Image 1 (tube, rainbow, N blue to C red):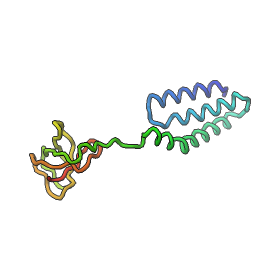
Image 2 (image 1 turned 135 degrees about the vertical axis):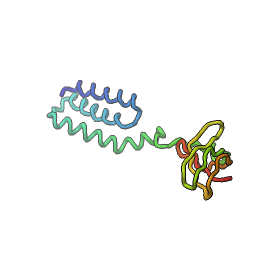
Image 3 (image 1 turned 60 degrees about the vertical axis):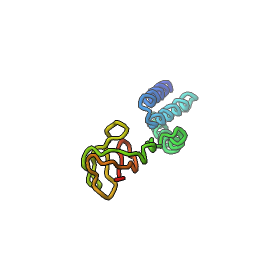
Image 4 (image 1 turned 90 degrees about the vertical axis):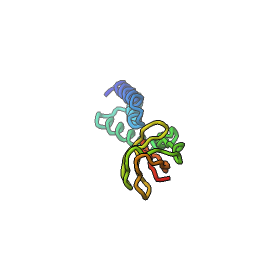
Amino acid sequence: MAWSIWVLLGFLLLGVELVSATAHVGFFAVGAFVVAILEGVGVDLPLWGQLLVFTGTSLLAFAFVRPIVVKRLKLDRKPVVDSLIGEQAIVLEDIVVGGNGRAELRGSTWSARNVGETVLVSGQRCVVAEVEGLVLHLRAS
């Protein structure tokens, strides 16, 4: 394939990366640009050779560069809602030990999990021990 096709493929992959923002597809754009550069400077590779260079370069970039990019951009960190830990929530339905239910906190209804050692009864005040995503981990206060 001509170098210009590889450049177009690289920009197409970069566009997909910008739309998806997953930090996955962009590294395959690197492989396309490497093949475009090789073809542009006159290295005449057969199609299977171009595909091999594209695949190898993409996988190497994905394996070795992606962890650095993810760490620098802090994409590996889960947002923690730690400001809710220690606050009082009101149980909206009975929740058995280890069970799930609903609780009210700051005027909003949340999914809740009983991580304590006693059953939480509807209307009971309890303490937020942990927040996992949108689920409050509650124990009796």
